[in-house]
Amino acid sequence: MTEPVSILAQATAVPPHRLDQAEVVKRAKHVYGRLFGRYPGLTDVFANAGIEHRYSVQPIEWFDEPRDWPQRTEAYLEGAQALFVETAEKALKRAKLSARDVDVVVTVSSTGIATPSIEARVAKRMGFRPDVNRVPVFGLGCAGGVSGLAIGAEFARARPGAVVLVVVIELCTLAFRRDRITKADVIASALFGDGAAAAVLRADGGESRLQIGAACQHQWPGTLDIMGWSVDPAGFGVLLSRSLPRFVEERLAGPARRFMKSQGLNGTTRFICHPGGAKVTTAIEAAFELQTGTLRDEREVLRNYGNMSAPTVMFVLERALKSGFSGHAILSALGPGFTASFLGLEVAHG
Image (tube, rainbow, N blue to C red; front, side):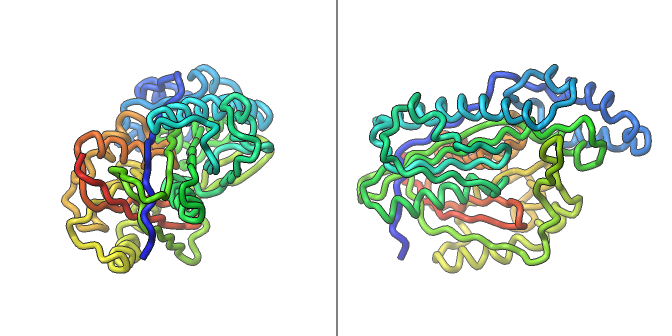
């Protein structure tokens, strides 16, 4: 049996610049004018995304000019460090701990490249000990929030009593490309925002309302082209297959049911999911045989923050806890690979 790990505290944060969907549509019509001319229905992507506003590390005017790798990287490093410090400090304060108490730092991010990694760059500002164990994780995409917590929990189990800090940061808006005019880029400009989340974990047998149980990943063969990044001299370019919602509806239930069976979970278990977009959220409900509209917290997070990639599911978890949820749950997200990540949770009555 998997030893439970306590989530002592968690926190979320977004950068200061709010992107209202109506303003984004106006600018997108200018940037993608030729493509909209050929496919007028593409403008409906913005209206049907289920998003009212999102947040960005840069003001919307920053995207009016072409940006190269060095400019995107500079913006990533500055924005990611600020969000790391904000979320980590909030989570540690809620756990009644300091940065010097942290034994392991797991940093998850797939929207920028940093060497030295983000937690090393902020170590002095945070006050981490020189012997803190640093674990930067890249490439998990939208599944990074679930898998990052699972990785953190494994470190906590391996070192009972150790404090593990998991910080998940994604700055998706920095991948916006004026030089590429594809349908995938239009969809990305309608969906993605920036955000971060942090959690403090410990496996010491102590009391905590929120416990992490077992974790599982499932990768489907031959699906590398469904989601990911391409890389060229200007930066990352989004790879996003239009078959994604149908794939989720048809293929997600199998591995989810196998994970539930392995953990002895029944039909009353709640799914807390990463909402990739309005269509994907509906496809998840269909896959899990849920009534349309069941994933209310997921849709509300999507409406107010957009798809922030990896941290989004942690925003959904935070909202579910604030609404009074208790019982067994499965944290679920999908990412490049194409991979489903699952994490068992138990929430005691608050």
